[in-house]
Length: 498
Image (cartoon, rainbow, N blue to C red):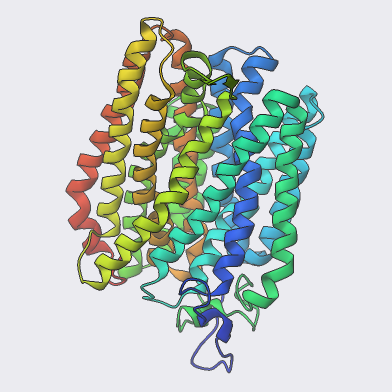
């Protein structure tokens, strides 16, 4: 059972602070969530910049084993938000979820700093669990700030996305330098400090700038329903379709020999589809179908994009010149290039989307995602050329990786921030966090695939060119297929103008 505010009978007024325009035309609550997400992403990307290099250069793991662990870890980081989103939707609310998640994440990073294998695995487990509580709910709260059909939503998510990437840009520079040049424990500890700063920022400003946002639906002060201008009654969410969906998903995973993680994916995806599909009808059900179609194509994007933390990091470490004059810089610094480009280009993309919308034109959200896949494919074309030089035993110029990351950045800005916005617009209100978890479930599947594909670099050490060709083909193929169903997606979401 779930309940939301009946706006027709409640005397609750929408807090004025949610409608202010003090932050570049947006509410100041967006700025608070920007800062909170910046520090959480600083902690995540700081650890991400070090993980594979720590395993290969310090623990002396093989590239294949390190890549598979990286893929499993990042998959679980994006899988647990599905559970966290469900718990927030039904029981504890997004506001409490962020605090719980932030505390657990910080503990995980500090555990890694002890540099023992038991605390290493404990730290990874804590970060995975904490991210489940934190990640889907901060994005959901951004969507809850805006009223329905607010044209600022896409640009608001792009601004929020800059917070993600400010943290992601600082993290490899700070944590990467400390980890590779001072000591691995200092890099991991710095990531934990970042999460603590995020928690402090959130607790300081949540009541002032996000009144009524992130509460449970039964809380009479919940402003999210008013923000959405939603009039609802009590809804019964049938459990049996979710259970049946989970069983079917587990069976498919078993038949595909997907192992324990594949079974987990099957159970989670089947249950999510069962709950949301059979818990809706009419136009809402069509929107759920559209979301799951988009989730499928998102897998192909992140599967290729997430090579940044594994195969492209190894390529930077082993096949790229790392000298700038007399200074040798850490290979982990390459992971700062993409977020730096995002910080530079996000305002440009946000301005373009807003300008085109005001003129009554511009691509739909799903067509923007198609463009994202095309840009991603072009970035890997550059890596194909760089891989060809590496196959001949040459150390390549840093400009090859820089160019690839530039194109990947353009692709990301076409897909990721507008994709988050798309989920908040299209998802039925009572399934908002659960379906945001579904978005991250697609990320989880993609990260697992990315890690397993990156493991091929050990066998294809002298065939780097062929390895990167894989992602040219998969990204471009997904772009073509998604382009063909854009009209269908528009029909399925016509009730929300997505």
